[in-house]
Amino acid sequence: FNVSENVLTTMAFRDGHFNMLQPIIKYTEACQQGYGICAVSRNYAQEAKQSHSVFWGLPEIRGIENCMPECERPDFAKFDDASYKEAKGKAKQNIQRQYDLHEDPDARLFVFLGRWVKQKGMDYIADIAEWMLTTYSNAQLVMIGPVGDSYGSYTKMKMESLINSGKYHGQIFVHAGFLVVPPELKLACDFCLMPSRDEPFGYVDIEFAWFGAAVVGSFKGGLGKVPGYYFTVKNAESTAHVQGALKRAVSAAMRADPRALVRMSAIARRTEFPVSDWQDEIKSVYSLVLQTFSGASVVRTATHRRAPRATPLLNRG
Image (cartoon, rainbow, N blue to C red):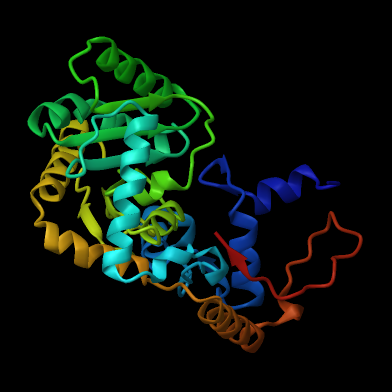
């Protein structure tokens, strides 16, 4: 990139370490009075500013909730409760047959769908799966996704051990790899499992919510925007603490009154994340940046023959 060592050490190092965010922060501070840094959800913006010292000198990190186009919403999301209940019952029966689960219309189906990596926290599910399936005989668990790191390998090993024990036949289906899943899986699902360690926004919860599922997951970053049972992580370094919090959330979901779940499902199917709202918030930040922008404040270094023309910067994490 034709960047000198002097520029790198001056602009891209913080506390003795290379930091890719540092040049952006310095630019916004020099040219935009520190405005223009955004995150994809309000909660994640707060978490980022509290967690990373590089942001501490900024006047704000603007949290702008991501949007979800209405064209992505399934048609039956607009069904009345009776029609939806019938469609969900058929979908659950088909999924139970396809994944060799007990055919039980009253079973509560938990689904984890996504990459098996540390960020997603699926290892916590593996840690409590035996307790969950033993404690609640009408709980069914489906886990699908490709292994992406050592946490995923650990999860695969634990889940395979659970299956090989033979104790939970008809309650569990696991596929540690890419698998094309039918749309019926999201419709059949009662609870989408999302015990994420870190989740800037999260689209999976919206996808499941629009099919009528509630979430059982951590109250991290962008999670918490659709109906569900959430737990707060007070000590992320304690595996026992997170496991206990997840168990309590699962128990709350299993004890929930069916009528309450019907109401939650109806609310979930009607949640909205309009593109127009997202666009308005983006425009408001651009307006603020343009008001504070001063191209003359660009820091010029002796290593550059000519500094490039400065332009307002809007960075979204």
